[in-house]
Image (cartoon, rainbow, N blue to C red):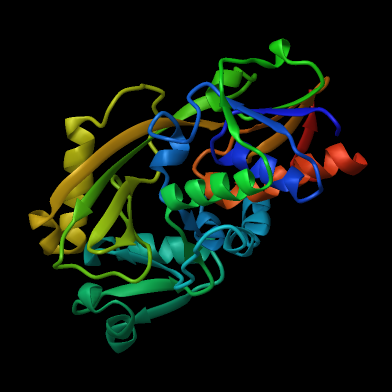
Length: 324
């Protein structure tokens, strides 16, 4: 514990540094790009802290650990706890029924109840699932707040190229796909930022669709982040025309006013994932790998960092811990 170096200053690396700092340890923190930015998938995240929604497709560990995420983040940055809303178009109501069966922690609402929560989404016959305990945050603000909190404790980001082989002592490797771990693959995520004064949302909204599922996260001041939940492709590069068309078409189906919104930013990146989509702390000799965060980066980074710090401090091996 006297000599710990963290490689990678995305959400996993920053949380690893934060978890160690809470135990009186001042790690060295290195990233080849320096401070967080558009070079990493943490920059393009939705920032939804939605463990129960994720239960539709995720393993129980994600649901269990994710329930602590909002309180963990609230100690670092601003967290909005207005819940999450899941909706479907009238023709896709079966998708909503299926999602309800696969998840817990929700109430089914419609009519006046939906109009009270989200007036702009209340149309005749529309129903939704309200996950009232869920939350969201602004990822870029959260990253900046984490960096600032670490700086107060004397931990700054050193811009340098490094691998675990270059560094003596204990290393926590948070480089994502660059770590080249067995079984790790890239899953493409794509997003677009829109600005419109004609739509108001108080919470993240997931639109269920058999081909083009979509989530929309309000950022305030009429700005919304639209994202595709999961694209099984490891192709790098910017957003494709087809993806942008599908995102905007889905948003228009949710609310026609999105057709007149300004497109202010687009982005895409590859998220590291294992086959079961559960993040892991993997020990390989003196190196701990925090990896496989998939689309659960902000939801699971605090838990992953906590288990890594527990192991280094006391030898405790949590349920996310693996040895290679």
